[in-house]
Amino acid sequence: MGLRPGEKLDEELSFHHEMQERTSHVKITCVRGDGVEPVRLLAEIKHLTDRALRMDFAGIRAGLKSSCPNSRNTSTSTNPPSPLGVSDESNNPEEPS
Image (cartoon, rainbow, N blue to C red; front, side):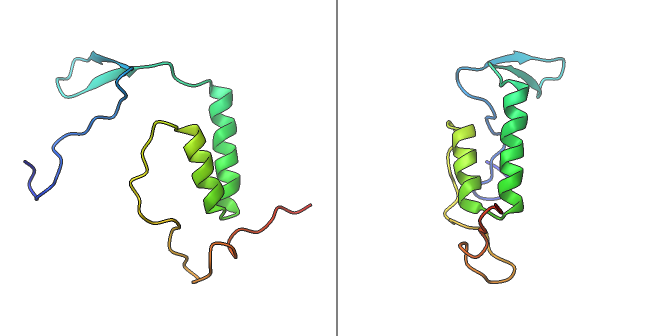
C-alpha cells in the first residue's frame, strides 16, 4: 500500500510481448521489443505537432490512437479546457489552401 489511499508503489511500463532484462540496478530493467522505424516515428510526431499547432484535438486523439493501438484511454474528458472559453469546433481551423 502506498503513502496515500490508492497510491501505486510501482507501475508496469511494458507490454506482455516485450522482453525485460535485468540491469546492474535492482530497480531498473531494460525492455526489448520490436520498436518502430525512426522515419515512421518522426513522420507521426510531425503530424501530431501539426495537429497540435492547429488545436485539432480530435485529430490528435485519432493520431495517438492509430500510433498507439494498445494504449487505453483513461481520460473521461473529450477535450482539454480552452483558455479562451471557445468550443472545440472554433479551435479547429481548416488548413489554408
